[in-house]
Length: 363
Ligand code: LMR
Image (cartoon, rainbow, N blue to C red):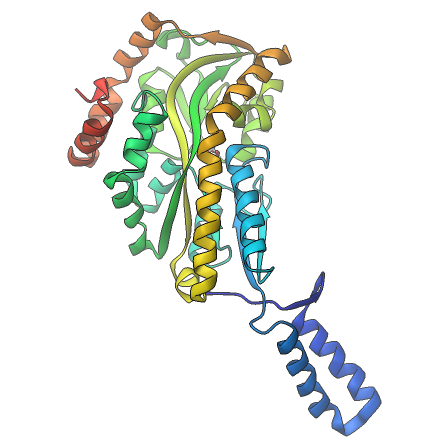
């Protein structure tokens, strides 16, 4: 596992190592036996121009740049680059261009990438099943209830559970409330019967789709559009910002504004990378992250609201509002997902979250 990677770039696209090698080659031709000495002075020149070397920080994520997470990642990059005068080379890889959902978690642990911001339930397969609590349907009535968890002792405690996995939890970033979509209207639980619904890798989401009568099918976000287009899956769930930017409106005729579940992120880094950062750089990264977190949380709701308007105006997907009565029927069907979670994970975390949110489904 690698810690801090440094690359001192003298010209864009050229590393310090490259320039030293080239300098040595030129010196060899010009000065014959004196080449080794000239090569050494080239290294010193490179050191003076870039005393510590650039620190490379790769931030991989799976969504579009035009989403709350995509925009927050770009702000993090701009803030950290400015604060360090470019000493940190922040490279953001959106839309699964570097790694897909599961791969990015492995890559972070191996040190092949420095920061990721997976959705919370995706930490479950790492053995951190407590994070799947965020996938419980109708757990949060709104962002205020959510923040009582993410910004309180429960959130802090959850982030600390990443440490034994060689990871550091830096922040929670908001996205939004999920809606369901398919090529037939989804109003009552019976409408889900027999539909293959794409889910993220989460035991809670698996239970949720089964409780609604659907067949859950776990797959990476980057594969969802083509799977929907090919009929490999019939429907899916996501906040509007992802539905819009992943162009799911081109292959889904109906979306129900169900707000039945929350999707948000944990920003995490590799513990060794973080520990080995020079103190001033780490402080600058914390400050940049603070700005990015404030942006993500400030724009999450408006970005999702405007994405939903754009979907409705697109003309390809009919947006259905869920009546209170229909919502009650969903909640009745979904109580089984709560009992399963309680059975699997015990009651402690559920009770703490229930006390913070007042969720009626927690009984
Ligand atoms: C999904 O896989 O649907 C989401 O977790 C993607 C994301 O990161 O918002």
